[in-house]
Amino acid sequence: MSITPIRWQKDLPPLEGSPFNFQVKSVDEARKRASLTKNARWPGIRATAQSSGPTGVPWVDWNGWQVRMMLARDPAKPAWVDVVPPANARSASFEAAVADAAAFGGRWIASASKAEWPQVTKAAAFFDAHSAWDSYQPAGVLAIVSDFAGPNEFLSGEVLNLLARRHLAYQVQHSSRIGDLKGIKAVLYVSREAAPKQLLEWAAGGGLLLAPFATSVKGSTEDDERWTIHSTGKGKVAVAKKQWGDPYSLAVDTHLMLGRKHDVIRMWNPGSLNTFYKQSADGSKAVVHLINYAFRGAAHEVTVGLSEKYSTVTMHTFSGSTPMKPVLAGPGIELQIPPLEVYAALELSK
Image (cartoon, rainbow, N blue to C red):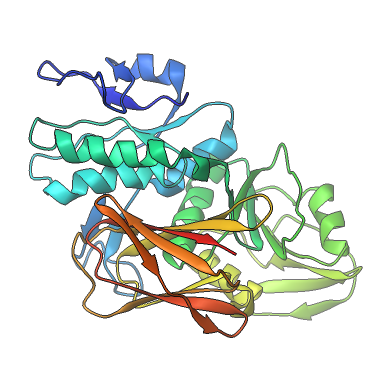
């Protein structure tokens, strides 16, 4: 049984019958049970000139990328988002806080007054009812490999953040236990040290390895503005021409080097939406989590495109479920998403 935590407070309603089964009375107590986020932010958007990204779009505060990083560092421990709602928190943001953690495999240490208690409980119960999705594996043909610690923590974490905002699906692996790379087309190794032999050998088998400046590779080369690209065996190793420092540029370059043809999910008019696409082990089922950090319906129609075909699609929200009709588009499908306030899950089967 998974642990669904809630922060202890004097006026906490009875937990019996709710999805919450552990009261957190201190941070030290929580750390004994789970990995905790660092400097987690209350979910939402910041649209000031100072906080907008290089593209000028609103900057989204979210914590799902931290959840994925924590699970990569220590898969044996649950990942909890430790953030307290601000005094002016909008009602819908409490549902987003639940989804922002749970959709990515973690849990928010819930903090809710009596006014927000019903919606927080309902959202947490939704993810408990769909816990089977936690066993699904992230879709995508890109793997991000790092130790996600020390001098590599900031850059690797921001890359996870920014690639997700580009809706580029990826898998996350820890450099000390690189697992099966079957189906992976490209690996980004985020480190100040040279890429390990295991990844160089994988690239020689036909993959693309994006390696840090410290990596030394023999073989014929081709020149790029930011990379020296080596042909090795059946694949390629692109070595950065200088030490990485800007996570935004690295995220953009990674997407360009991989190529849009390998996008397993595409979004049209996503605005402040984040997505997380996961598939069952046999590939017959999938789920796409959609979280809207603006807490209001998009101004333009949102379309989700997937590179694989699914015959049955159901959209689940915290209020109910609706069957959807997928539209065939090339090798995959497209789905028109109705106005979404906070969260929806697209449950798919072939």
